[in-house]
Image (cartoon, rainbow over all chains, first blue to last red; front, side, top):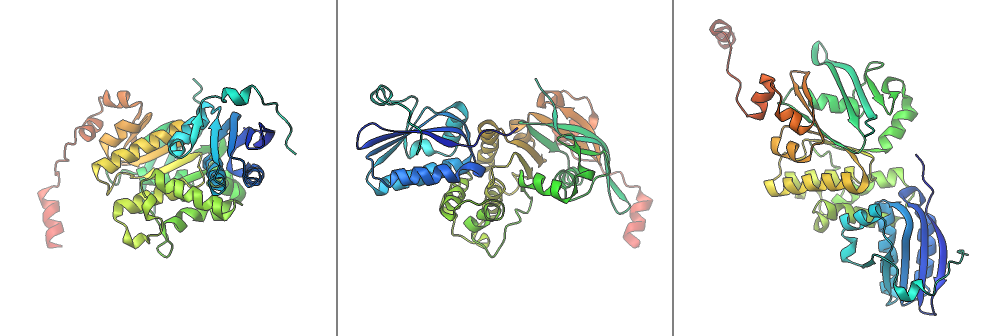
Length: 124
Length: 262
């Protein structure tokens, strides 16, 4: 069975320092290149906090985990932080299996300060 | 529960020359389960594995992969199937001229178009999973047998296979590392839904990880079922295997003498 490839559904700047990215679909080896490029471009703009909302990501593999690590490194290089939120069951199990939960900030749900302000905007 | 077969083995017989090593084997591999194939050395379990990964051809109708006859798959069909499987061979089969990380990267470089940095991170994650994160730059010759086994597993996992075949995972490993490997296999099943086929004669490991067990003897399937069903088998040969009772020597004196004096 084929599932929808991962895409960036929305990018919402909360202010000039904090940005929320909403991913959607299945983040797997065959489909990670485009969201990887977009996420790294965003990270290099230098936000202090980049939140990746994974609520609508139904599955992830190691390649998907690897691009999150690349974004983490890009954020660190700019002195910023990466946060993951809204992990579905399979994504959560993969994050734990690969010990990613030990190296970055993982939240069960969107911070109240973000969820109250954000509106999804189509990625450009 | 949907028990549709990912792999169906139907009346599989197999020979090496005149020596028939499998006799009319029948079983089904269910998606997302751990199937353990057990039996004493030489019982034919590794030969089954060779058929399942396409290293030994099967007769028409004897092996169905997702309902398709393996004998009619063709080169393209087998290439597609092999992209979706990972295999840890008993010998680990590492490339001796490559570092551990380079070994893990081989299938990713061959079968994916991922950037080098993504591949590097995937390799590091896989080596972390098998407890070899600090050995990525080592050569295979610098590793112990158990570490080579784990490096081979990291490579087998590189592409996040849907089906993972593992031949004797515990051989050469200390009990703690072996238990860790069992836990990893179960975590892969749970986190990624990987279907896992393990060939082993290690009873403790088999009962720890199996959803389904097959016990072979002299090329024949003695029993197939859940671990509990296998434990309750009344087959004398199965009981002997489970209770680790040695075979009795039954060679006739005359035959033995003939062997001795030639």
